[in-house]
Image (tube, rainbow, N blue to C red):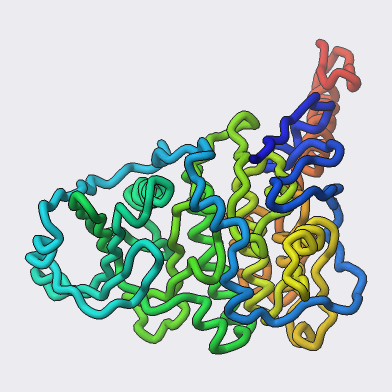
Length: 425
């Protein structure tokens, strides 16, 4: 059903874009059938777009939670060949799956409480460990209801959660299995960031900065370990408890690694399968181009935009999937509404960096943490964010020429070949 876009002939300079997750220039590409066919020309600009009438609208619950593409991917995971093994850069915890003959045996270790979450294939219960009375959440999945695709998704999540350890990533404590069910013992959280958003309508800029900083820190950790989440959204961020500050109500926990992938370095390890939630989906995925971990940064940008103003950056009034795709590929978000009057310029600047349509020029998760807005600086000093690869190569070339001239001038006798960047004594 999905047609992978090949790289074709790599022209000179194209590989530079690929180094940071970019894609080579090419003609119109073939989109997944479910998203119809569109064309896209990568945008290299990051300047403030011309102000125009906003087509944005505050999303309601149905609009926020409707995952046009995610549902298809979750139910057809066997179509894809995304790596599920944990990253070689992480040490896998010795978390053994404990086999139980009957579900009742779990009650020897945990006392189950009320249901705090429910889906088509299982439930999440409050639980208390009898040994130390510590609270946990237990996710119970029925194998027969889940089917092979969901079980593959669960195995992805288990493999990754066994290997990651970060303050803002959900923690998997224990794993039990019976012939009919899986039991995942996880840290207990109290709701989703989505719940906070629906209640507050939008967050204050300082609160949004806290969320984005913590989320970027978690994602940078994943990317450093070659893990790409691919489904970052409000519903997949839980609200945890800060052990150092019980009053911290924005102690987020990134969860749901069912669509995550382990990506190696190099062009040959770019990802190809189309997955995620449409409103958060990066242009390169919609275009069915090979993509990298930079797709997660785009999703953080969408989430940041949503928290700051309460609206989608790309919104279709009739909820038409094709129109949403077209807006993501061709339009720039508008910052002209009254909601943006009190938002600082550094905040908007970072949004532009994250929502750059070309992943080669998009800021990375690690670089987000050094942006002036994240660091609380009032003004943009010089060039914040990141210098793209082309700019860095120009600087390197200039410095190389200067060093070459200096080496030649320090030589008592000899000739300098500036064209070939070398000195001959």
